[in-house]
Length: 315
Length: 315
Image 1 (spheres, chains in turn yellow, purple):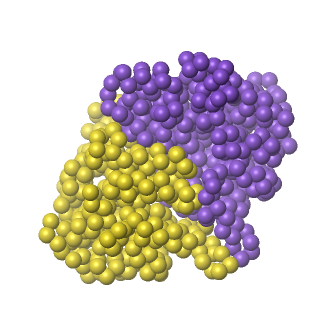
Image 2 (cartoon, each protein chain N blue to C red):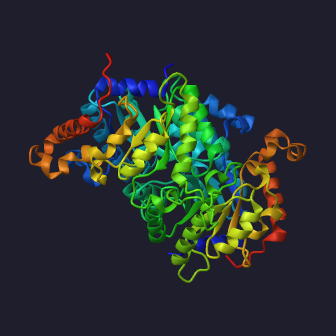
């Protein structure tokens, strides 16, 4: 069983780019044809929305499979549709893995002791689908509850060859409320988390350059990204905030490391809702929204290319 | 529409106690009869476990309904059973509300911007079930991402008359990793969170003594509980860590406030798996496990009674 970081590096090298497509379906942004079909098929609000989210996500996956290494479904949007949404999420994640994409489930879970074990098993384990079949490639988790609460996730990631991304420095405007508070030695909370994550990454990497424990570092804070890449040399990074949240290619350049495989850069709305953006809407009519997704993906790949040159390997 | 805190206070006064029964189903601890029936009904691992968790949780609810004010299902254990588990969780939560219990969904969610809105809508909104029917009474949330990420939850809680419990000081041994780090003015991270939560509680309480934004403060740190009760006079507390995690009635005494309604105290394993504890197993044979649950609930109520005297009101 190869490690998460080895599989991710191979996928980045195979596709030649570090793009992560965020699957954040929002009902009001879905192409009209999908909303109409989902509503026409009946059922309650939850069922209708879940049906639309599933079709939309599957079609996005079919557009980007082979082109990018990884997709990142956002659990919240599926959970908003109740149990039908969660069922749709799992089918979407299986569809992505079947299509050869790696899957980072963005659920930001975290809890104590045996409860953390349950979350780890839910997302990283094999249960329910047979050995090697269940779960996702990686899960985002929240460090607030403490180091002991990360360990069950780390144990499961090592056991099952999966990955984790711990929130270190998030991309939102108010990220600093707690993350920027510093101790008397001038070490901020996000730096404390970074040290913890790097130690876990280093201890789980074996002979790989990167461990199975990664960090979330927002592209909207470029200076912190430079600093954190240096402070976490063995930590794979998940970099949100590109595109619609405002970060540009130059902002994420520092995230990759010399080998070009140390980070994936996520864009959600900028790709999946490209059909709503003026530049793509002018080129593609509404019923050709998938071509807008494809064009936006190619554009992001091209934007990042000067900053990230993963060493190509044969598949 | 009455506020969450008004409804919770009324429930505490009506039952005369602040006990929250944690619904943390774990397959290996379920009564044998339930495991056997759940397995015999077939399906995959996820379906079997979800079926067992649902029957177990429903039967616990039927035992404690009318006796305690609130139950707290732990989302992780249900998510561990994949989509069938999540469907079971929602049926369990509806069953609890139908039985007159308030429901705190312990999911520790948290994310940024419109993603936080989606989580808030998922748990606190009315969607999927019609106005006033969906969602739960309260949700636990994680503050690491910053103050701006709490706001969508607060807005939804106010709009729908629901409540929140923000993690302030958790009950696990490693809680201090981040929570105990202090700034140069000697204010700890958990104290920073407490100030933020108290401000949100105060701003949402209207004429009520408590707001709709509460705090999670572990009973396993009694000194911090004393301090935080004083620092958060308008914040309803959810106090985990009682019983199996080691805290005693005297440890939680400081949490209630003078009116006796400022906190609920959670016990999960100590009540729901009472049939495994020597003191109850000796009195109740395995097939009478519900009587062990009932006895353990009465015992916890009696233990807390000297420390918490909610003013009785007529129902």
